Length: 574
Image (cartoon, rainbow, N blue to C red; front, top):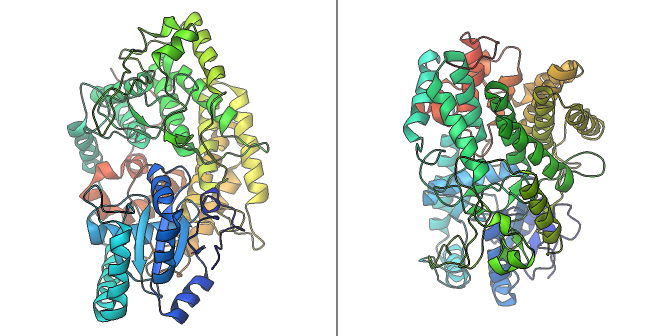
């Protein structure tokens, strides 16, 4: 047996190329093998910077005994969700239908024709955390496939039908100004007045919500909306979700207070948060907002920018086999470095300033964070923080996901262009221009179609986010309007008859995904509506979703607001 990932370009797939599991990438060869050998397929979907993906890999996929069980029972396929968001979307939908929840690593067992009959997320090697382990699960699934095939295929047919039904579109009433107001009030109801953000924990940045609230507050002179934005941006900037030593934002906060982050750093978070802080600065003129933009973009230039000016995807949460190890400090370390200026403002404690999530006991480690109101470091404190950054560079660095994705680069182009225009910083505009030129030169295939990577055809998000980046550049330099229009027109083969666009133009999978919901990032449909000259067909096509939960589709509310008569003059609400 052999592993088939050695010739892949995805850093995530290459992390698994030496596993004893006989992994295939998503390819025809794997499905032919499954049919020929009459085996179900074990599909594992993850990404390079996913902590629990690493845990499952170390426990099970690197273990010869577990690998032998998997190889005997299944044909095994490994997918990078960032390379193939369409595969991830379809089978995550199946996971939600089967289990009621989702996450990564996504684990799916399916027929040789791709119809799922089992799904889950992280599965330990042995029974643990009230979860069945692979040691017990794999023989059970093998037995069902070999001795109760009717049951497996019946479940697979039902789940496949449900996935397709979930993807079916419904027509809704035309959205109105009341839809905008409900989006605001739903966010207002969830707003944490004590600590900023929405809900309890975990807390995600969700910058698209903040961008909507800021626009809503300005256009409708709704002071509460702007105050929610200010409070949330300040709380995140003061908290441990922000890297006070090296700049940039971690993925999310595990607590209500923005103090203890999940430590991975995603390009899309940096891009969207830069735009949120820059737009807030444009309205509120608070210097710390511009300072946050500057520091975050410095981090991106230093750690996520390639030599050709394009941008990498993410930094891992883990280093040296431990989550967050690169970012935390003991008091003894800090004392040796002569950084006592940080102890009081950044809440450094001998026992550590956060507890272990499992034991709830102090860890002895410290995350730098402030409490509100955020105070921009003075010259002396900034010198000490710079000293810490240089010291930190001596540590084992978190892994870099070096994929250059067209959609994520589009977001970063939009961020640099927006920041350059608002802060009047020409170097940011030059960064945006350089990345845009590179993507435009290298990411169109032989037939002139946009690509997601050098080898994978473009998805809706690639067209939408690149168009967004180019439109922000066009607002600044007047240089890319034609390319924006071309990207919008090229989506005709993605179009849904009711309105909006499928994620892909391909019919390869068991279902053709279409999405309007804003998750960690705005939906591709919302973004393409945002950049279109006439967004009404897309907005009207999203009517049912908007009516059902406007606060889950806040970025689509922006073009709706324009259609309903929002003005163009930015003014601070009274």
